[in-house]
Image (cartoon, rainbow, N blue to C red):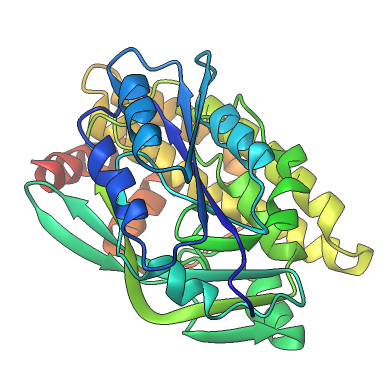
Length: 342
């Protein structure tokens, strides 16, 4: 299709150490018809001033300053302000390869609701990098193939068919804007999924680039995703409820029974993250908290009625603890977390 305008939304909060490299990677894109929207979420460091400086250097940059309200309100603000026909997102501590947008744009048809996605690299400052591939094989998915490969497999599986991150994707604008209604500002982890899942369910065409890891995700130990979060269990209750609402609104009546079970299986995977969070980051009360979470009636019922398949060694151990939260298993999990993150 013709070279359409693409808006790239970057939520910014206290990112002064990384911001110039991140935005520089957007300014260096070989695809030029861009609108770069930097949304400063009340940063307390020099991020706001860096954004303003960058905007004076390139007319494609727009800066929005707002009070601190959290990452969801920040990127949704940018999406609503965007004027491009297609939207892309990048976090302010990440960066992308120069050809990413051009190669994504080349796969667009402009005739339907579509998503183009690439793979990514997890960048750990002291532990090197790890390539991460989309669960879907490279190629184009439409019609029955989209239904069979994506619609019925987007929830409840260990290896996702498509990552729930809002980043490393190019979306038809309406897929994002029309599904912001599902986003919940109170959900602090996994919040991207509340836009990505309904957007994927509404799209008519998905293209997975052929093993092109163009997005670089910076692994920051102190970020909310990787640090200890004492509210994670509560967060996952909210995330499960919001996911159930998406299923209720996006699936046909004859599909809902199986997809409601998929929501419960997805919740099991959420609980594995909760146990991991407690075991690796809460040395004072991890044993008590894990036992309490695992022995809740709703947890026992979910585990009993909705078994899941896990293949990764770490998930096998977490799942075993979820089913058998005894002293030995919890201690083994704690030791494994200490050794892995040492």
